[in-house]
Image 1: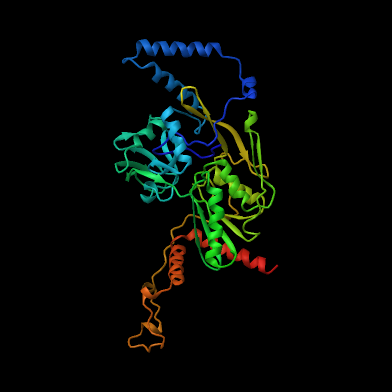
Image 2: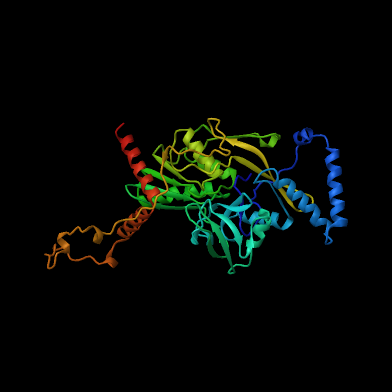
Length: 436
């Protein structure tokens, strides 16, 4: 099942899943009696449009529009996928698709950015979670469905589109030009920080994310030459993905216990997932970074590790998407994505419309490092004609690989305040373990 939040520009009308679900007996038994009066009204409207509308409308278009409207009226995540979009959905779960690289939904008739995806045109252009897109080129978004908006934003890789954006804290709408591209998402990235602390970034939950996480931690330990003392798991602006991947990531840090469970009306929606794989970090401190762009599968992981007292969750309240969508194949080659369940954290919390509240709040701040030249500090080496230390002057190009990586890490921490704070929390947790 797919537990993403919305739509990826380019390949799909709605994000999908690796599971095709059929109707079971429970569904059939729970089907309500047919509302004849409403069906008569539907037929009447259909006939009036067919005969009286100013232009002749294709019957197929009318019926697909009715189906799409019926699904989209349920909630922001249920949708109809025509055959072409149902096929393209499979590309998304493999992590390669065309578009701009944003997960979106609808709010007040506008396209709302849930999260830009790492290393995509949207992320590089500075799009942010919470942005409202009000115009696509010269066309207003108001009055369009999400599917129609997405189709406009699709296009040949290399072509450009201008978006008009409204953002909290910015006085007036502004435009952003993006170049469409084939999106190749690398789900997991890793690097060493300092003091034997590792950093793993998960940008999206794909089929192989659990395996890639295990490899990332193994790579960090080899690079470090010994087990990690702590880990920062970065789920900021991660819009979700495949449910099983979220379970595998949670399982990677738990020896046992409940990870997540779902509740719905049909038999297939009643699920429980328990940890069984063993903790890759052997109980070492973990801090999970989240923000308002962390949604769905990211919230499953955060909620599981928080409830099981396995990690400190740091950052800001998450998006609050706590429902599961199932794709059901239709006879015409199309598919319907329909919400079939809500998911709950181990302690029974529903995340729907609430999100995960972090244990440590880190406000969104812009922090800039003050240059030494601006604070007036003068050291011996700044004095004219200062005495050499006898070791010779080390040129930048003579830095060892370890020194170069250390400088890159310092630069990263200087510009990423939230990551710097997460490092501080991990260090405190390591110290607390050592003092026990």
